[in-house]
Image (cartoon, rainbow, N blue to C red; front, side, top):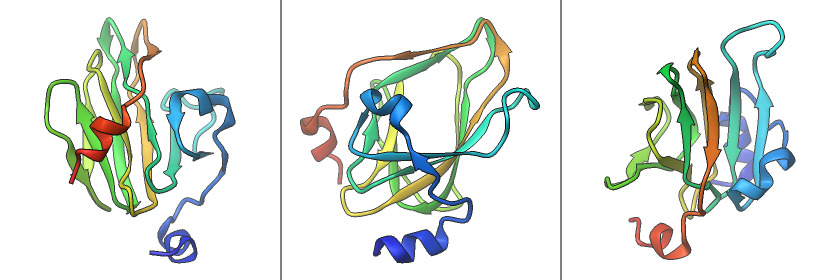
Length: 142
């Protein structure tokens, strides 16, 4: 799929380069916020990954409730929880990530990938960014 074909399927748009979080990604990603933190308690954003782009291992902490929901909308990607096999992601897939679960997500090697990230409200929430997903870990996925 070419970038132009992908952009036609990426309903919520590419957004801007995700420079604020670039140090937590391998490759280039883009962010298109869909809600305003000052007006809505539920933050949602379309996150787009170039082929092979993925974020670092990370945890969405909360003392109660919290976590994240991924709604896959275009392209093909991966989601993996620490100690478990990676899950292939395609448009229409929805992943609920409970609070305090170490995980990562991103595009497959040969595909752009876009998902809506929904931050689930909770108490005492924070994000902890951890180590990169190594090339060895990533390249082992088929």
